[in-house]
Length: 462
Image (cartoon, rainbow, N blue to C red; front, top):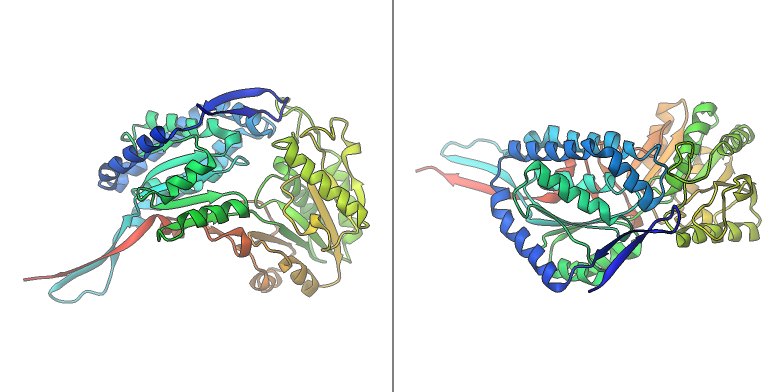
């Protein structure tokens, strides 16, 4: 029997051990989810909404324990972890519930005497959700709730670092009263996930993670003609124009770069600043960054905790070293944070200038607390640099000119364009990306689309 240990980045301790699903366990999960489809697809939308609401309420009721678990599993300070449930997850879930009846109803077509015609949205079947560790509830909710509301059964495989989150979802669904088999979690190996994707009882796959991981999912699904929704990260740019509100831009860019230790697919990872305001922006950015408190995430005074593991921190440190070797200058680094430890996951925020696109830190996803800031001379130069990336999730523009932001936004290759904000997912807007960020879409009125198939009814009267 194979087991997996969750090693906490907080102190290196083993906080949980779980058995990895055997072939027989996997077969049992697939059989139950297939059987449950009949009941669930025939359950009214109103009842699905009621049960999803009860699930969310159960998570809210247990938020204190859940928040502590998140911190121990992936290192985010406990002062912030409750908001993943109490703000983000519930906001996204409840918005999708609020529009379920209208968006999942039949589509009318022009009436013709003697005929009844309409298009019905039918569930795809069973959705396999492969969820990430960095925002273990937010990212899962994006697909879980719309998939369930659309009448699909769901199997969730959570990241190995956050297995306890999948168990929490199972507990919440059981407490809410979901029919047996409608939601199940599985602790599975990569090989088992591939086998599940090839199984005829899996009808759609959602994956959030690395580009290599997304490619593996698509290879596993090849020839099955099922959908694979992927969100594969980003190297999200920010541009501070000459007319920006600098106080706002500084505060939001610092937070957007370093919240959750920069471990967000839509974190700001590179900043371009117009030469007219460059010096003032950099000075303010440096001063505010130095106010972070790096330490044990269980301490309420800590504002930035460890990265998820030592390997992730080592990758960021290599990017910083490579940038130094190519001429970058460090304005804030680990030496400013007493709890930084070059042999651990604890790494303080790093601010680099004199950077360029020959450096890994400006091209490859860092997914950590490091930022490069470049001086630019025009909007056109900023647009060129913002698009010089294999990724395209979000971009932010800091300006007081909304028309200019929209003109630039039309030229920027991303799924979302922000003005005067960043690193935020609005459930009323579709969440999507381009290029190596992947092909998935989530949330908004469009968010039910991946989980339904259109079925036409063409009925001729006697």
